[in-house]
Length: 454
Image (cartoon, rainbow, N blue to C red):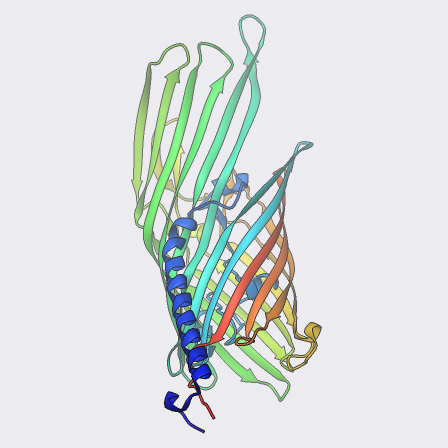
């Protein structure tokens, strides 16, 4: 056995050189893709009217491997994928692996209220993460993931009285909004002892939104009032994680995980412009109001566990608490003409999730034995109020497959396909049903192996 390329036959040397060049091209492509992702991540992927409240519709931040498992993550740990929801898991990445995971989502939504129904379709690039072993016992990960999305457009018309001629007077309110928040993160996980791992994620947190409300009536002499809310955020986000892995016997492996996300104020501004314009002339007047550091991230605590049996069946469960209820929110008081931070508009958010992954025979030779079959369910309480009423709860049921990909030089990559049914509903609120298809591709390659040639 030789370890020098001096003894490699010519055709082997050419093959080795071509693979090195190809890997360099892939690395350059991945870095270029990462550079473009911040602009892509700003595109809204929702048309939900509920996204106008708080910071929008929150993302569960799951990726290809666990999206079909109800989003469980805190107790999951493997060197075959990147689990950014618990950075302690990065320590499981082995020294030979370079992992890259990217995904897209397509969504069909149905909204029902008062006997009326509306169907919509959306789709967008979702996330991209990468990871590798940085030092012995230390893994590194980085990527871009969404935090929340804002996107809606609808009208509401009501009768407010009658004119002097006896005709009905109606008022129409038009609501439009677009934007969202994302995080570009880098993190590390350290294998402290045989059983214990610790990790952290440091994120650049940014985003913006624009929300318009236009109010007018069908009377020719009435004024049109337009309220434009705008905000731009640029700050940081810091999360810590821990995992304890304990073999119970030869067939069962237990992993317990916990995470803490620090709460703090976000740097940025929230602006409000109120414009009154007469429909009978071009005359109008406006008021501009602004709040510095209008939003905050909540203290977030997550705990979870997973049990792996015979390296074939994984069962996991999570609980997450986000302390939104103690945070203030920018509110406009029309009677006083003030735009200030006020409490009582946000709620603590609780989420429970459970999921399983079954691979019939990890060392089998038949295709169906190597596929991962996944199921999951989760429920989250609302984190905002609509008027004086709590917002809708969110129930999610999911399922999916992890399909192994094989070729002449890679046998560890996976195509992850999952489907999610999401239902948002509450008393006397719009009923929202969403069906999502998620497609994620996990490249897991041996990039750092030494070559041995006979």
